[in-house]
Image (cartoon, rainbow, N blue to C red; front, side, top):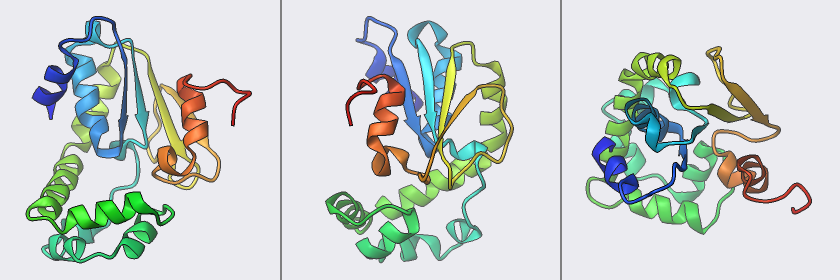
Length: 176
């Protein structure tokens, strides 16, 4: 993911705001630490490395087959988001060969790198903002601005998109 992010941002001439969610927060943080001149600020949404770890089940041998067979309704309930076409699409994707295995591998890698990511957060030189849902709070104290979105869980960008967009400065406070 690090090489992909570097390639993605290479043609960008301005210093963009880098926004990442959950497991992607670690790679985004590494990029910001390694390339501070290429990012104006970093927004971490529900950074997994600062929240309670996922259940042990995600680290068990049962995780991949269970995820592969999960219905859209059960996936929505597990994620704490409303059912909809996006969740149905994600559930269908998990049934494709190798997808569930890669998702679980990413979760395991992120779990193993929690302390490394926390260390990077202390070293980052660009402004950092953290957005979390009130029902999925941080479990680690940080020295960065933290905004809590009332009533949101781990996916505020899906359940409370207007508040996330407003925080990012993408819409005015008078809209939505």
